[in-house]
Image (cartoon, rainbow, N blue to C red; front, side, top):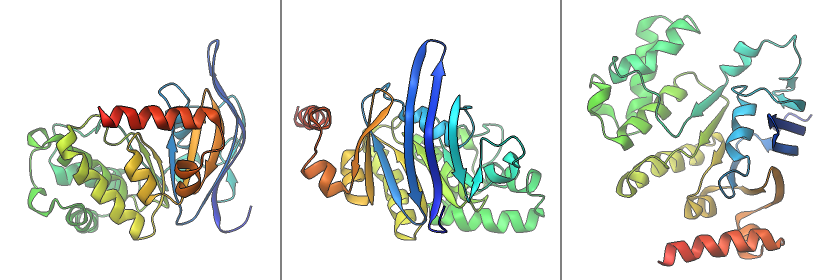
Length: 250
């Protein structure tokens, strides 16, 4: 595995009972790359992301992160997991804590960073996501878009090497989707390595270096946005994209 490759997945398999969700997935992600994963619901996109972050344990195969096999029982999973930021559909904030406390909790408890330093980092990232005026706000009083931006800032406070986004805008009202996507655009522009499961095709087309189309547990097609959106090779990809475009026209 070369230094440029941050994640390498080989022959990844995952089933839930009799449901075979991931069927021999092979994928590489390079440092500084933005990979968008698209596909119909139930195609295995979120499960793939959760396996990378070890929220789900794969049945077989290999996931190398920073050259270490996450499937190896001897590997320091907690240490490696700290380097992988994750943003979920539902924001998963601690409602009983302020915005700032949400962002400082993990660095202080997991990385043992002193409070003053953790707060300084948190404030910097909250300003980055446009929430400089909400540092001491009650998390419960925020809009969905603000909560998701706090969730992104919280993940950044761990100084991750890669960010995983699982449908980060699917729980948001349409008019506030843009504010979250703008934050993600800025992260991409700054060179953050990102794997984004999304149904926001315009975002995938504009921001990703590579688009991965999943269908029924396999990677059916991948390539540059120009290739996948402009000239898809597989009939299933064409069908998915044409149906998506029809939905948008209605």
